[in-house]
Length: 155
Ligand SMILES: [Zn+2]
Image (cartoon, rainbow, N blue to C red; front, side, top):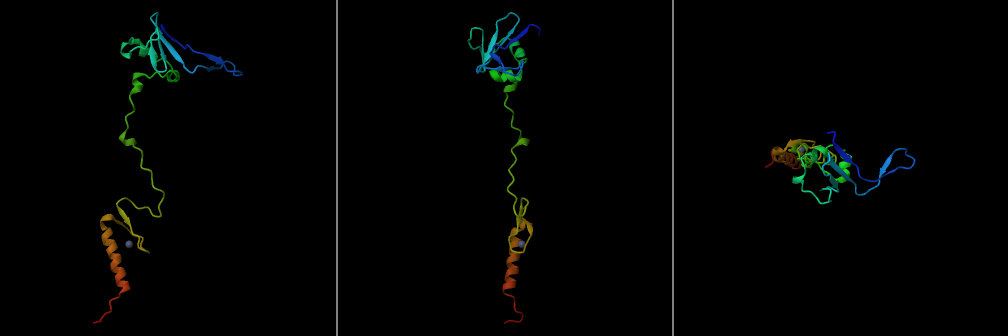
C-alpha cells in the first residue's frame, strides 16, 4: 500500500484570517488515483476517466482501483461523486420500518380498533363491532319503552 498515491488535484485557497485553513474553491473537484508508476485514473463528477480523459468502462478498471478508492475520504468521494460498489445497493425497505400510520388527532374518546363507541346520549359504552347492532337495538328498545310505557291492564 505504500505505493498508493492520491492526489487532490484541485484548487484550495487560504481562508483569510483562519490560519492554515483552506477552502475548496473548485466547483468541479476531481481526484487522481494511481498505483505505483502505472497510469492514473481520474474521477470527476462521478465519471471515471483514464489519463487521456476518456471515460473508462468500470469493468475495465484495474483491480486495485476500488481498493484505492476506498482510501478516499467519504467527503472527498462525495465531492467527486464516486460511489463505491458496496455503497450502490439501495437500502432495502424494511417491512419493520414502514412509515407508521400517523395517529389521528386526539378524539374525544379513544376507540380501540374493532370497537364501536356508542353515540347515544348518556351512554358511554364501547362495544365490540359484532355487538354494535345488538347494543343499538337495546337503546331502541329502551327508548321505545320510555316513550310508550306499556300501560298494564290496557285493553
Ligand atoms: Zn349505548
